[in-house]
Every structure is written in C-alpha cells, then in structure tokens.
Image 1 (cartoon, rainbow, N blue to C red):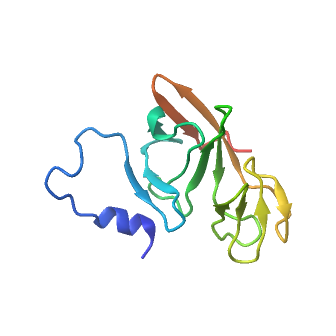
Image 2: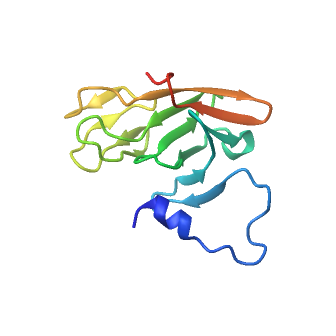
Image 3: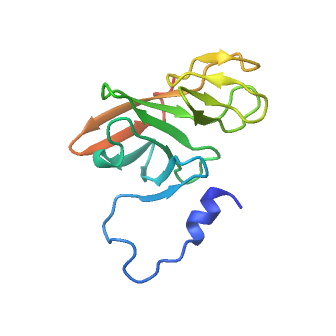
Length: 144
C-alpha cells in the first residue's frame, strides 16, 4: 500500500488527533518522520516547530508520487529535495551523512549533489522559506 493511501485510510479515534494541528506525523521504518503538510498551490507548509535543529522529515503532499526530504542542519539551514533518484526514480533514504538509493546504490549529499553513481544528475532541490512560525517548500517554478 502506498503511503498516501495509508494516510488517507487512517482512522481518527477519539481525541487522538488535535483539531487545528498543521500536519500529521508518522515515522518510517528508518526512523524519519513522514509529515503530511498543509498543501497549497505550488507549495507545502509545516510549522517551524516540526523541524527542529538537526531534524529531518519527509513531506508527502497530495498528488505527489515521491515525497520531499527536508533537513535542518545544525547551522539552521533547511534543505528540501525531491526524494526521487535521478537514475531510476526510486526513493533514496538518509543513511549517515548522505541519502542512499536502495535500487542501484546511488548516493547523494544533503544538498542533492551526486556522491556516487549510477545517477549522473543531482536531486531536484526546492527553495525553502521560514517566516511567521511556518516553513514553506516552494514546489512550482522554484526547483533547481
């Protein structure tokens, strides 16, 4: 079952979910949180508190075949990368100090650069802004 289908079928039991929360958080097998952001045309938005110092998460918006991997470095800089290997489209996952594709072993730095092939192109990187308690990933027209 795809993550999106799973999230859409999650039952809401009692008061387990707070009304008005900006996103839902799940955890992947590798321990990286999956956040369901507030989706707006061309962007994904989460609360600043959801991505603290040294934190990482996958954001899965509606109609996205692969999530966006977000990471806040110790310096406070936030990067957002499309988690789709440029070799064959598999989803790389964080492993140590890099993202590793489970299909053919491509490795990428946290800024999206290829460290090891067979991928030859970097991961798509998105502009990220932080203001008014929100982190915004700009998907349309701002990917690199």
